[in-house]
Length: 146
Image (cartoon, rainbow, N blue to C red):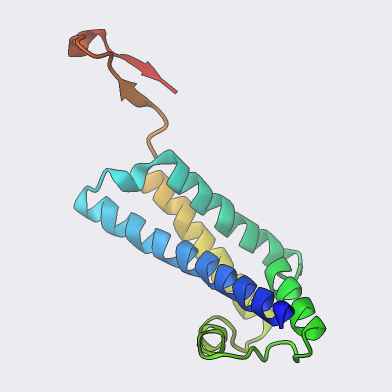
């Protein structure tokens, strides 16, 4: 029972990772077009670039996703077949994030997506410096720090 629950939690984590990667790019593009300052946050953009970079690296090197491998191992230990999660949420998450295609199609899609993320780094670069002023000091005495 606990192995199945753990496998479902891994599936939710995996889906969250995927949704973050997709929606972070969509929000970055929207923020660039609408002038939202928060989408230029260096941590948000850096984590996003790191995540998609890892996916592209895995795809180009034919490395299976460790989350998929971990989930499948837990399902087997829980008496389930891999890729056959029990429960409503797990069933639909799997339908949304796993589908069949030739490996080169996924590699191409991940690479193009990664290039879009890199392009957005150039078009709407993250803020690497923040302005910090001391309380009571005038704006001219503020210094730039990393």
